[in-house]
Length: 361
Image (cartoon, rainbow, N blue to C red; front, top):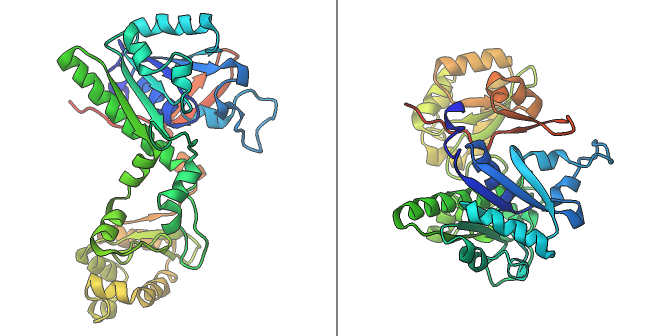
């Protein structure tokens, strides 16, 4: 990713944000070479995620591994913005800043003199981006898990006979962060064209619903509410289905086309399945999915992982072993995505890159 690390070397970003969505945007710009100045509330011990430690972490450690995930390469200022001296310090930074990222609680930005109108008066070229939970006029606080419940994620996630389950990542915060990055980049482009800054706003709610893609389209056009079906795809089979080899390795199948299915049958030498009227089309395979997966499992359980993967690779069948994070980061590709940082007190921290695109010459 070295070819992207200096893209924004002349950009100054002021981060007035905590938790994940806003700081993820700050880290995005930091990875691209920008100078990112992160302001944390000194009266509460800084960013709230500093205290979101894993049970295995030292309770006396001032910084959690959660904090590390979206805070890399930033200059940190511990300030109390209720103090005029602290606000004046921020205003001096705003004079030379290009971007402000904020996620203040409802009404707090105005109360503290950190709202767009106040900062725009100091620097008309500022691109001000903020994240809300719902919208600018809604005082409800926003939490990722709550938004997952409210916007459909939990209802459709989990096994058919199990409870609704949230995604084990702060996915709504991540999506909102991506939306805000895109908005700020558009704002910077607009500034190049007009010479003026602008105010970019994103809500967790909108970011969440907008990511529903095919699930939303199915409901909006057919009136069908997506049900919990585990990892299986609602429209393709066997796509998302899991089979286990004789040595206990689970594989997820990505068989998305008729060609893929025929190739899977060839790889497993299942000529009878290939010609079975129940499985000759995707529509029929969806109808008889349980029987299909059972037959595939009976064939796969006679093979080791190495044998199964080799046969599928030979026939171009898309699939992948289900790995844990230890296995992911044991891979060379996983290692290349790790960002390290040494703090002033000598502490080494690690996290994954958030910028993974490459600009190819």
